[in-house]
Amino acid sequence: MKENTFAHRGTTVVLAFFLAVSASSYAQDKVQSMDENGAPIFQVDPFWPGPLPDRWSMQQVTGIYVDHMDIVWFLNRPNGAEGDEIGGEENPNRMACCVKGPEVVAMDQDANVVHAWGDAEHHPRWPRSLQTVIADRDGYVWVGGLAPGDSILKFTRDGEFVWDFDHRPPEGGRPEEDNTATEVLDQKGRFQLDQQAREIYILSWKRVLVYDMDTGEFKRGWGGHGMPLSEITNDPIPSYEWNGTRPPEEANFVPALHFIEISNDGLVYVGERGQNRMQVFQKDGTWVRDIYVAEGTPAERLGPTQCGGVGTRKELPPCGTMYKMVISKDPEQKFLYVADTANSSVWIVDRQSGETLGSFGGNGRYAGQLHWINAIATDSDGNIYTGEVEHAKRIQKFVPVLQ
Picture (tube, rainbow, N blue to C red):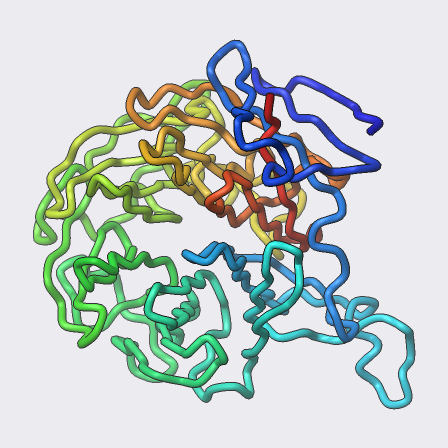
């Protein structure tokens, strides 16, 4: 096996260009290699997943979720499809490749597609700006989007519609920010399930809202550092002048809130792209701590005149480090893996101390590099899956290096 090894912010990533060896092929007594800072080491599998079947094009991967059977679910959002990516849809075919594929795709560990469905014709309220997919233990798949008319839809694994969370604003409208409102929500696409408690956690404006995941009934909610909904400001968070240090402290959540994850020991992690910060809570909203990652990076709080975005302001780099996060699946859930678009990296954070141990990635489109990472997941073998948007439009698999 020919390898090219390089160090990136304290963590070594091994790029296996000719043969990627998965962790499951090692002897059972092998353990994951760690670097000098205690960060686990990963190598990219450059051949996973390979081309999609039936000439489907890979589009913006805005969400990835690995279920309890290690099936990898991902969203294949076609909003930025370019002509040479879908030019094969004409009859007769204008080109050999490609056509728009289903927008929800599930693969097994060998990258065989086992489920694929969903698009604007699949359901009359299909999300126009896909963001999150979650496959639960009961055999259902939850899909949510961020457009004003989008909500959270529940399907069977084969794509049969089951339930609509709704809570949409009136058709064509976008409500003004009111952080006490719980019936009509502007955005619902960033959410998480607590399947044991039968609850759904939703990020909306500057708060976390919790609903019954079977009835849609509101149960509780809180703002930054656990403040009551009535105390959350409806005004924009003031911008700041970047000087290479962390943004000024702010009691409120600083949008955009971009992920919510729940650990096995009952802690809730909320990522603030506007502040380069994770706030950690108990499930009742009691604040536990703040965790900053790459805190000196320009945060989205700088505002639209200084930060780039997907499809707009391409002359400006993106801001903010908290795009997505996943918690490792070892029994202690030792690590938080933070997907950071601004630095094109996955940061490895010790969950107990909040210390950043290292990272892997680096800006680029070669195997092992990252460009506009916007999704991350992990499976029971410790493999990490990343999804990229903008023009990268791909999934990568990083496998543990064992010794």
